[in-house]
Image (tube, rainbow, N blue to C red):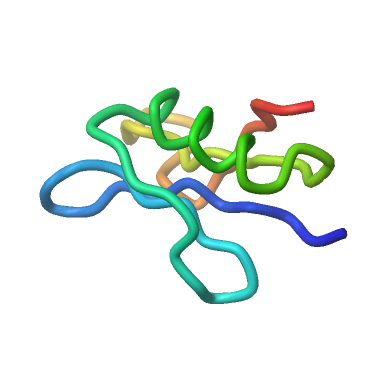
Length: 65
């Protein structure tokens, strides 16, 4: 069981697991749902979408499960 990471790319969002693309989508949730279908037992972490006063894109939040 290894984490799946959703990262923003130029034309949408990409889900990576073990440094391989397993799903893509135009939104984070779309990419996450597709990745969840591929690996339903693995945790999915999404990249923070915006920079704020207290954080930047280096923060992650858990979407599934």
